[in-house]
Image 1 (tube, rainbow, N blue to C red):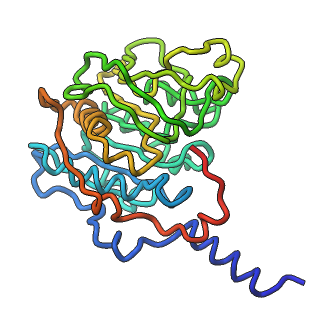
Image 2 (cartoon, rainbow, N blue to C red; image 1 turned 90 degrees about the vertical axis):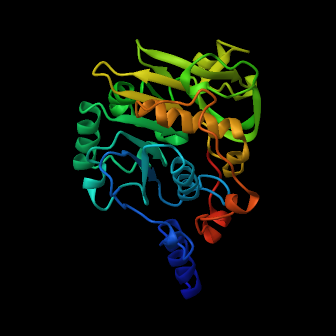
Image 3 (cartoon, rainbow, N blue to C red; image 1 turned 135 degrees about the vertical axis):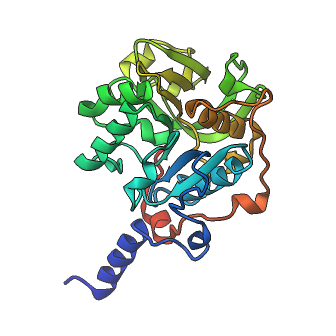
Length: 305
């Protein structure tokens, strides 16, 4: 006999997976268009609730990015929740669109009309920024992802997992302005991506544990530094920037990660990147704000990078 408490537990779990915004999150302005049309509109799309507390904090991460971008001259960030705008017109005229969300079958723009909207943005030369799992898609979408983002994660050669990394070399690129060698502890990474044939610049690479090389292709390159951040200039002039980190919310405390992502947003939007990068500050208190409610999800879901 199916116990009523079991049913209640299932309902609560389902609610947690598709939770409404918390009271704190409801204070964050969503889909508010800039009053000044001369400002560069940057749309930040935060995915819906996912993974454990402190991981995949898409809403909280985008809320931080919105606050930091407000300090950039001429920039008007617009935040979107739950993976896609309720008013698609928010995307019209955007200089760049950032995607911080689950990938694979959970991608929030697989529905045909949304996919067509993404294609129209790409055709218009809109800048794209894709973080963490957003670079993962099904095999039938992989060619389009390479066209849009310059790279794609596929399970045939790609690897993923959680571990500490060190970036000992910072290549010269506008996106890397102000950055110094740094380390990120315990983050989740996707690597050994399929890259576009042309116009890809490898922004950051680091060695990965050989024990993480689960595919035959990856095993053939032990000790190789693997690209986890890149830039891409599309044939029509549009720009894309990708970074497969950002799994662990605590790592927004690192100034170099903030520089990387903020500079990448400006670059993708074809805005000037300051000589020392777009500086930002964050407090421990700010890092604790706007987390998703994941009480039941924490007990039932296994972490995935």
